[in-house]
Every structure is written in structure tokens, then in C-alpha cells.
Image 1 (cartoon, rainbow, N blue to C red):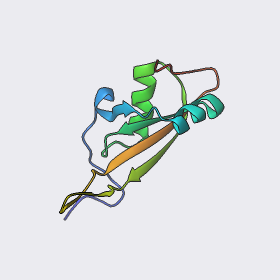
Image 2 (image 1 turned 180 degrees about the vertical axis):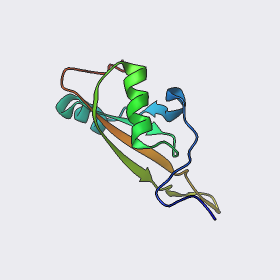
Image 3 (image 1 turned 45 degrees about the vertical axis):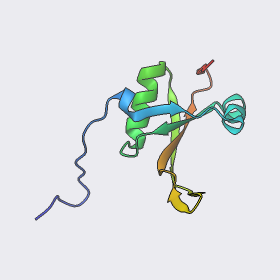
Image 4 (image 1 turned 90 degrees about the vertical axis):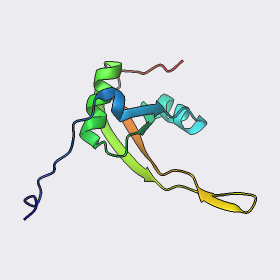
Length: 104
């Protein structure tokens, strides 16, 4: 028999293992200024709670909302060889209005 339904077993990720890098793009910078929302590339195994905990610990801020996206790899060609870019997970983290993150 396996695990009872609804019960997850997952290793606990450290905050520096959850957040891989900030996504600093034109769209992301505009969202951070207008909606106080920041985008990160995160570990594909990370849950929304892991992401919330990691951002709060690493940047000393209060997180209001976390949204995630699983991004598929895009097909790429180099000469006759065909391949794909890697799949990755994106998190958009909305902060409390009184907090900010400065990447620069």
C-alpha cells in the first residue's frame, strides 16, 4: 500500500535552494513598481509555502500572495540538431505595500 491520500512526503528545501535567481525583465520591473510583485526562477520541487518562507527569510519582507507557473521548454535548432531548452518554474511574489526588494 502507498501513502494515504492527501498526505505528501517531500524533503524540506533550504531558502537558498528554493530561489534560484530573480527574473529582472522589463515586464517584471514594471510589475514591481506598479503592483509590488517580484518574479523569481524557483526550484521545480518548491511549493508556494516554501517560496513564501524563502522570500520572507532571505529579504526580510512580508509576502501577501504567491503565484506559480510551470514553464515548458521551447524547441531550438542548431544546424540539423533539434533540441529543447529546459523546463523551469516561475514564481510571482506579491509583497505587503510597506515592503520593497531592491535588486540593484
